[in-house]
Each structure stands twice: as structure tokens, then as C-alpha cells.
Length: 335
Ligand SMILES: C[S@@+](CC[C@H](N)C(=O)[O-])C[C@H]1O[C@@H](n2cnc3c(N)ncnc32)[C@H](O)[C@@H]1O
Image (cartoon, rainbow, N blue to C red; front, side, top):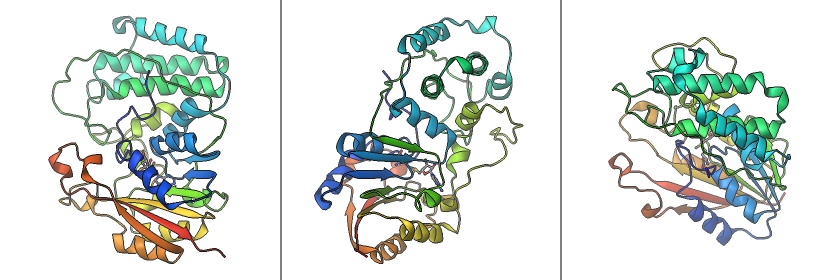
């Protein structure tokens, strides 16, 4: 069974989530609700669901919202109907299906051509039959499609570029996702700064992007598959017109962060901070400096900073040898 964390995602806290919750446990008291306001993969929310009575999960990407619905939303769904369909997907023979939007654009580039034909065909079939499924079922189908193709994409894990070498033969088998019905979760797809003005939770976990690399551009193929508007595509990486460009990836980042922290109504703010990229390229430079984060948080309340031990994230990759991972925890001053 595929779990929510079983995807490649830049900045995923899969390896760090135990450490993050150790720090949170040691510093917070009497907390019943939690908000993961830049949730990405949703791994932090997955842990929070086990601990808190109420969890809010938010990210502004269309694909992430669909994944959260598939793994967590509380709507009833017909497992048998979904499993039958997945079995059918596994019996599709690519030489018996025709070229389509997906194979014409991405075949032989981001995906093996035969895989791309299947992906486009399946996506079209989901679309044609969408009236037969409720929102949870549609989300499960799209998530099953995307999580399984993630494993066979011809990339280093995102869609900023494909690998320009012959695509190795890999089998595309669709496995089920471990979908659950979770009662205590509320799912949003909003700009974090807008949502911040409307919510009130004991803890808000804040993990924005810190450099100029936009997530909507990295994962444009999943945004495209989920929305299925078949947009015109541009450039070598075949991206559509830009949308969901984050303020946190621009020089406006510090102001956006100040506004967010100021607007949040919470007892504790927990902020992740890191330098995930090598310092060689300018796009990798952090838009907010460590000291600036500290200053903004201090204005809100007493702030402690923790440093993740290397064993949690260093998988021996040389690119990451200067990787530092910090966690700020602020106890917000009472008004
Ligand atoms: C560093 S990642 C979060 C990783 C996440 N903690 C995890 O473990 O997977 C930052 C996320 O913020 C989202 N994001 C960026 N700007 C946003 C905004 N203004 N509002 C909401 N989400 C935003 C991106 O789509 C991305 O998923």
C-alpha cells in the first residue's frame, strides 16, 4: 500500500518529522489543535492527526489538496469500485490505445512513451466518468495515478527538467494507496497569508519555501494532471502559464512572513528553516535570513531554536553536506 509520504517532494519532512514532534512535545502544553499551513506532502499533518483533536492542513497547490482528500477526507467511498478500476488500469496494453495530450507532450521526455500513453488514457477515462464518483473517490483515483507514476518519471524527482538520456525500462504497475477516513481533519487550498487571518489553532507549523524555486513550477505536471484543462505548454520543460507563484520565493518573502506571523492566532508558532540547496546558484539563496526569522518571531513571544542532528536528514549525499535544519518554537505572548 502506498502511504502519503511515498512520493518525491523537495523539502519533505519525512525524515525529520519524529524530531519535529519531539521538539514540539518538549515545548508546548495543553494543545488540542494544530495547523500545517504549508503542508507539502502532508507528512507532518499525518503525525499531527494521531496527537491532536483537530488538524488543519493547507497548501496552495491543486495536486496537494487532492492528495490530502484522498488520504484523509472523511467522505465515504466504495473501495471495491476503486480496486476494480485499478485492476483494469493494470491490464491496459499501451499498443492498443491511441496518442493523447499527455503522450504527445510528455512521452519520451518526462515519461517513457508507452507509459505516457497509458497515463493520458487513464486521465481521460477518469474525466469521462467523473459523474460516477464522489469527491473522495475522484481524489483517490487521481492520487493513485500520480503516486504510481512518480516512481517511473524520467526525472531527479521534480519536473523542472527531464533526464536527457535514453529512458530506462521500468514497469508501471498501479498499486493502491492507503486511503483513510479521518474525522478530525480540515483540508484547505489557500494562500497561507489569507488562511492565517481566518483560523485559530493552538499550534501553527510553518514550513514555507525559502528560495526562488517555485513549487507550482517543480510539480507542473501534477498540477496539469489534476486540473486537466490541457493547457498550451512552453519551453523545454513543457510548463503551462505560471500560476500559484509564491510570495515566499521572491524578495517580498520577509514581508509575507512578517504579515503571516502577525496575523496568526495561536498559542505556539513552530517554524522550520533550512538551506536545502547548495550555495552555488543564486536561485538557491534563501530569501529570508536566519536572523530575520529570529527577529520576527521574537516580536511575537519567547522563542527557542533547535538544530536537527545530522543523522535525521543526511543520507550521505554530498550536495547536502552543508544542509542545516532548524526549528524555531515561539510561545506567543498573551494579548
Ligand atoms: C517546504 S514545502 C513544505 C514541506 C512539508 N512540510 C513536507 O513535509 O512535505 C513548502 C510548501 O509550501 C507551499 N506554498 C508555497 N507558498 C505558499 C502559499 N503562499 N500559501 C500556501 N502554500 C504555499 C508549496 O506548495 C510547498 O508545498
